[in-house]
Structures are given as C-alpha cells and as structure tokens.
Image (cartoon, rainbow, N blue to C red; front, side):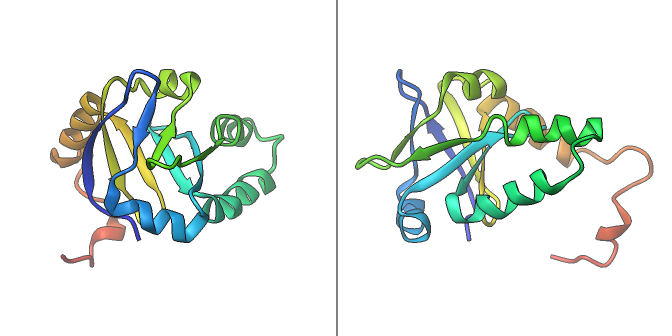
Length: 149
C-alpha cells in the first residue's frame, strides 16, 4: 500500500530515484518491474507490473468503437511503458511521457494505494489547491455524505 507525498528531482537524463521507503515494497511486489503511463489529469501513473496487468485488460476489453473509450485506450495503454528500477532504485522517464505530463526537474510522487501519481511540482500545487477550494455546483459528491475521517 503506497501512500504519502514526496518531493523529488529528475536528473539530467530523465531518471527518477524512487524513495527508499518504497523500493523494498516495489522489489517484493514486482522485482522492480513497473509500468509508467499517462493519466488524463496530465500526471503520470506508476504501477507495479502485477497491478497494471488487470487494468490494461479491463481497458482493452471496453468497446473500442466508442470514440471516448478509444481515446482512453490510446492515452492510457498507448503511452504505457515498461520500466525497471536499476540497482540504485532509479527509473527512466521517457521524453514523450515527460512532455505529456510537463515534468520538469522538480516533481512530486503521490502514493495512491496500489500505484503512484507523478506530477510536475507546479501542476501538483495548482491541482492540490483547486481540490481544497470549496467545490463549485453545490458541494461535495453525495458518495462522500457518510464518509468521515
């Protein structure tokens, strides 16, 4: 279970050092074999390979004649790349994925249970602040009505 927000830096070759607190879990779960892909929110998603495979199967089982589904398949599966942690716990983020997500040197890794989100730091701050602002259109979704922290 991945959680927490960590500020990180990309090196000049586009490599990201996975935080030490997550390396062992990723090695145990997937031998360091990961999948990195695009998210419609303009961030990247990082999955251990075993957690990615059923998601890809679900997405590809959707009716591809539906234009919205086809666009989602193109985005999420089309951008998906197999990456592997090196001996120093780093992964390489390709140029197309860095361009798609607007990643610069400073980024944020956000644990989301079975996956991570990777955000450009400025985009993360803007998204976070917007999420914390009072929701427009009359409040929070009804699904959150009985939720309590």
